[in-house]
Image (tube, rainbow, N blue to C red; front, top):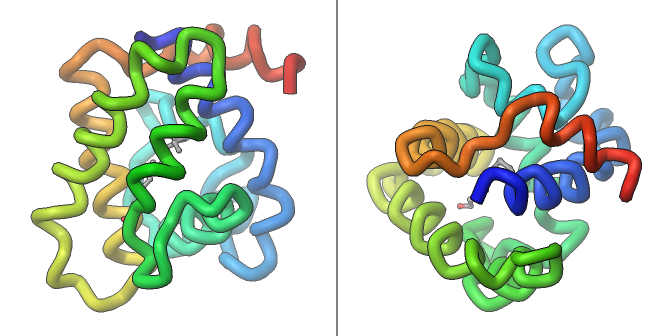
Length: 141
Ligand code: BOM
């Protein structure tokens, strides 16, 4: 549910600052990672895709081909409170969002498009968190 997603986002987002330089993602485009879930925030910038790759690699969530490492992603999500209720669904959703973008050779572009799909699907499934929910758990990490 959305609370689990808040925890994952808050934890994952802590690595953004470590990835800013190499990804070229400016604070003007994205000030804090949890703004990803803001209704007004558009998931379109190539630099965000580069940042998500860099951040994911801090937790070994991608394979060498920069596609999701299914088992590691599953374990990562499961490690949060009630994570086991979302881990399978989230892995399936991300994988289903990877499929239509598989022909895109630029890793950063492919990942930002995959992430945009994941945001839309999460909203449809009612597991996209509200800003306030994420802000409430940020201090835990
Ligand atoms: O092909 C590799 C795709 C990796 C996509 C990761 C999708 C999630 C991106 C942004 C949203 C993050 C919210 C929570 C953390 C999920 C790990």
